[in-house]
Image (cartoon, rainbow, N blue to C red):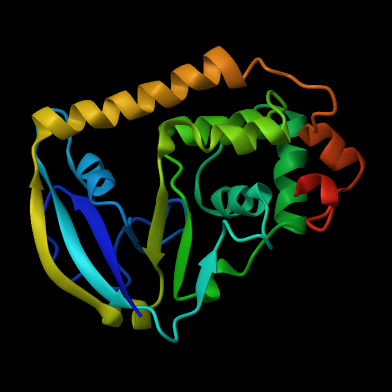
Length: 225
């Protein structure tokens, strides 16, 4: 089964190298792609700097792929992977207890998979996750916030086998004048919706991290589905 993938970058990458890259990305060391050409162009540009959307095909047959958006997982599984890789601000005892509890009860052996599919925690979406562990927003609000701005999914190659399956098929130039503006508009839209609507829209029955800790909720709790 061939899947098209795109990687936004400031350079053309014909042969991604397994074992290289930044260790402190969302899902650790890996090659971060998307199935959206437009999203890759947004990710590839900078202010006043053009970029590239590198285009690939990958044969996924036989690969073990962790889909964090499948029904067997909750947003807390995704958040826990982030806690293992990204640097969170832990300003309070509540945030510290939340981190410890999530790591103990919602961890996934994500490093054992060939590839991972899940949300991309850019600055806006990372701040939403930060608000949740600090007790500012509810579990429902966190779930809703991840759809603001329509950031899309990322497909991350983790194993050497996955890298070997990836075939470079070309690239498209992403012009900064067009795609940086779209990138910033998407981010601003997500933040505006979050602060204007979602962050302050508490509902009766909302579950906060304090309740998850106090009641020792696990991933099979129906309230987290």
